[in-house]
Image 1 (cartoon, one colour):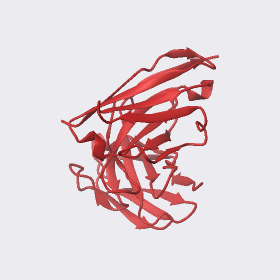
Image 2 (cartoon, chains in turn yellow, purple):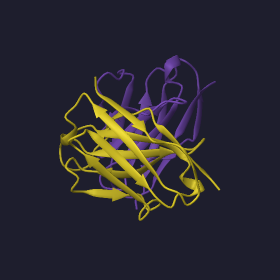
Image 3 (cartoon, one colour):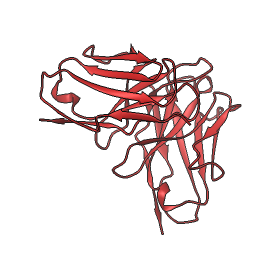
Image 4 (cartoon, helix red, strand yellow):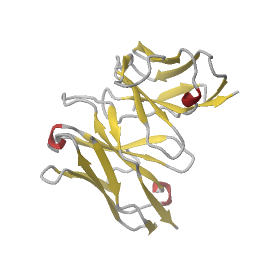
Length: 122
Length: 107
């Protein structure tokens, strides 16, 4: 069964740091691009960051650029999101999601984790 | 960056109704659009990719159409399980922006 399992969410003070992890199983992890998507309480979905299958292409939403770093360890089937200089507006449930296809280029997301909750206190 | 705008924000309908949700892009995105369904406390679920391709396992009452800047998601006959929030997302290039969502409520 294809599965993604996020962890690492916590309550952190404003200005602090946190690292989220996403454990992948049931598919050839190193063939697929991956993304992080977040959802603030009562709000819609916001794409945060993405990384290509072998990590050569990375991008971020403007709202997190310079503060968040996405990475992956294909030997461990793990995706990460290092979050620094956290702000109250980063409070959200963070989902990791898998690209639907292995083709280079844009992708929809066919498998999602259950999410991990990040709360930033001021 | 390209903006994605969904309408309506809220839609009240009854079981058996045919409903349509619209998503507009501020610039052309060709067919690089997906639709997701999300229920409270759950992860989003992919329904439609490449504007009109039905994801495996998704009921055929869901359909998508459009290209360029205007897209629609249609549910041909609403079922009780369909009451949820729906999001469009563009993925022609980063950032993969979502629409603000359409909440489908029971009338």
